[in-house]
Length: 388
Image (cartoon, rainbow, N blue to C red; front, side, top):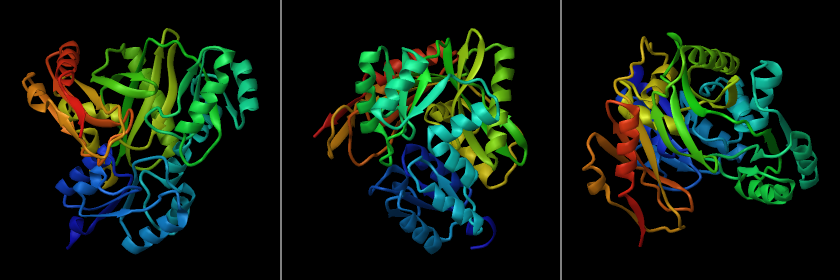
């Protein structure tokens, strides 16, 4: 194998987003290795090879990377031994976008301090706590309602809105159950009254920094249930959002796609979070753009030019979730859902269901966001997860 075909990527985390990254890499002739903590994860089903390891075990992670010697290491989740990635990067391995970015965004504390204290970006007021007693003090400082989250989690796990001082213990317990990597530290955030929340997919590549059209989304318990593109914004707000996104992604560095989450309020734009990888709300780009967020990510990583990102159609996505824990299930109603015009369904092929786990997504393109949202909702309403 010569030239591009000799390149290898290793996905650390092999969920539905990693699966799409793997497919886009293979379209460009790249060899793919999928890694996760459980067997038969979605990206493993399409990668050239796969491994099951505990990615929080730095020794196991180092041994695997030294064995495979990938050209690019692509973290897809937060729960990884990032200190090991920093060491490996110093030794010459290429971590996407950078090991520093992966480490800083692994927990909410690193990225929030960078955004607010170093870069001076507008954010909600915040405090950190390591114990229930510290959390009680932090809530008194911030006031209620406030949002309490584990410093490391994904898809909203462990996140809650603390509406009164009586709820503090409940929020603490929720954070302890939902957090990853046995961390007991939480962040307490001022409750921001926002008009909408968006994801601004921001790309750093050889062509410079570019942006996808803003993606609006609705979350429930911190996890997205619906997204749409483009989100209606004023030119002033778009410029403000792009300025914030450029500052945070410049500080993180490297090439790749970043999901920058922002609140739009009557007072302006607030920074919320950033992921140095494709974003779940960005799955809508599979039907709206000439290049999906996954295709863009791979192009940027490989050092290929991205001269333009075109929005071809308004569109929307709706998630399909499971509400039981089972190792045998079926996704029913796809045939009926596809009767809705301009609809696509992506079933992720996860080996088992869990309560609240995302199992599929419905995508719809239409002449307006309103129509796409309505059609995506209609198609999603006839799909169900059946437990065997």
